[in-house]
Amino acid sequence: MKVYHGSYTAIHEIDLTKCAPKRDFGQGFYVTKLREQAEIFAVRKGNRKRTESVITEFEFDEDVYEDSDFKILVFPDYNSDWFDFVIKNRKTRKIAHNYDIVEGPVADDKIQTRIQSFLDGVITKEEFFNQLKHHEPSHQICFCTVNSLKALKKADYKIIYKVDDINEPIIGQLVHDYQIDETKAADLFFSSTIFGKLADVETKFYLKDWQEIYKMLKKELNL
Figure 1 (tube, rainbow, N blue to C red):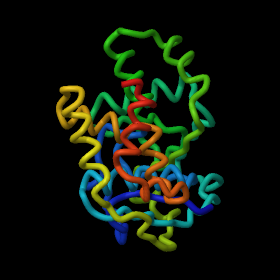
Figure 2: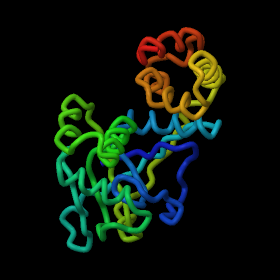
Figure 3: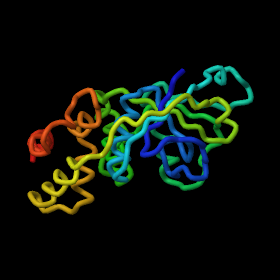
């Protein structure tokens, strides 16, 4: 199966010690079978680093699911077990499990906000899942151990997007118009549907003037 990793640079060698902790499935190397999802993540990382956005493609050997040498956990969908597992991993920098590979849906920006609301006692677990009923499909596989990397082989990489000047004026305008700090403005923009469309080269949104993109963003955010 082809899987993809979106970043600001091509991945030539995987070093698990450099992977960020407190992620959905713990510290590890993450890929997805959904190329569009990887592209959006790559553009977001590229914009924040002010560099290129790169998709690295891998071949994932699915035979490992039948191999007793690998300990694998799969969540077919958002469910209570997934929720508890993500909460456990996001609350500690230490390894919270002993699986080689974990597969399941993603806790994206909107879901992370809801998870934080749960941790803060603002919503219940039941309310969390009620809000997920219309959430778009997502997918990720986390390679958690050196052993797990045997199932992953690099195939190719492609620069999909070169950062231009469109993001900076939009974020600056949000700061000016709504008296918010730059971090808040960036989070609003990078988590928006409009940014997702901007990240998708097929939409050609990156060819539009930033003022036009800004108007569309304000309409989406009801600002």
